[in-house]
Length: 81
Image (tube, rainbow, N blue to C red; front, side):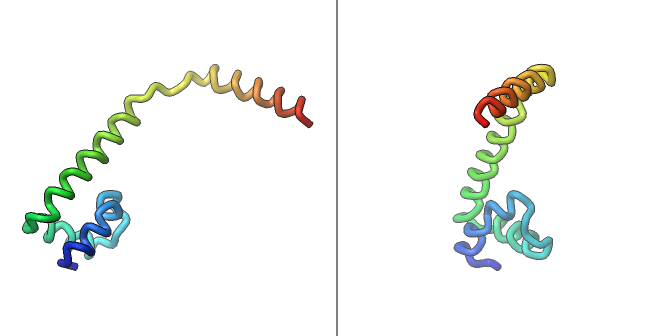
C-alpha cells in the first residue's frame, strides 16, 4: 500500500488503530518518506489530538445532578402516557 490515494483514504482508520498491523506498518513506512502524505498525516493527527484534549477537558456532571435529571425526565415521560 504505497499509493498516496490509498494511504490518505485510510488515514482516519490508521489514526484510530482500526487497520491490521501489517497495513499499519505499511502506512507508517509510507508516511515517513512521502512529502505529499506526511503533512496531511500531521494535520489530521493534530486535529485528532485537539479533539481528544477538548473532549477530555469537559466537566462531567455530578452524579447527583444526573440522578435528579433522570427523575425529572421520568416524571415528564409518565405524564405523557
